[in-house]
Image (tube, rainbow, N blue to C red):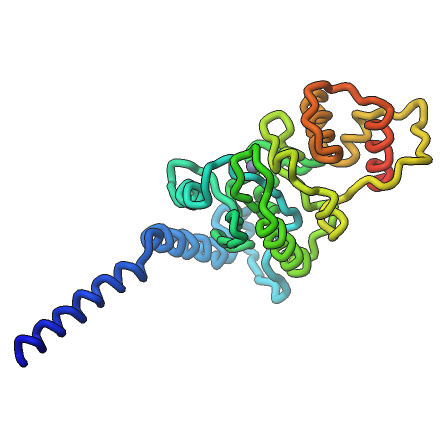
Length: 273
Ligand SMILES: [Zn+2]
């Protein structure tokens, strides 16, 4: 009897050890590191006045303020082979990249960073005159190797997530954009299969309309139109390729715009005038 009791106690002890290690999970130490870093930033926010700001000696704290909000959403594909690989990349210090959300092929959404904090996802980029897009945006990475179609589950999860973010932070439709839009010389994500029209129809992004009766003026300047939409037009070849990939879903090597392309661009640009 006592032998049996000892055995069962030992067995339960063994089970407890197993469960403790499974509760810790593979990301226990990186979660701890996250909390430590967030605490450090909380200390910065609590400084009154901020030590690095101009010291006038006349600090008086206002009573009226809140947190700064994200005003853009940047959509990416991971260009990696699995969700697990991406989660690992974003929890490895040496990669120096991250995103707020990662959406796996089965539609699972992993939230990796508080929306009010700055992820390292946009890199060197520009949209209009905004050159620090990480500071004003939320980055969403979709698990995709860069060449495959996005799954229905991913599209549905993304629509749900964008609906929540748009409502929470009052983000305008035109500010839901792709990584390639803000970095056309370096990036092509989300890839050519991404259904931008479907997203624009749901209020995330801007789409061109019916071009049947559109007359493009003779003096229409395509590059200036792209600039008004938001593109950095320094590299015209890259920006026109990005435009065709997004608005016509074609991977076109040429930087030429035919009459049909111009009608689409003209119709789009009129929405930004
Ligand atoms: Zn990207």
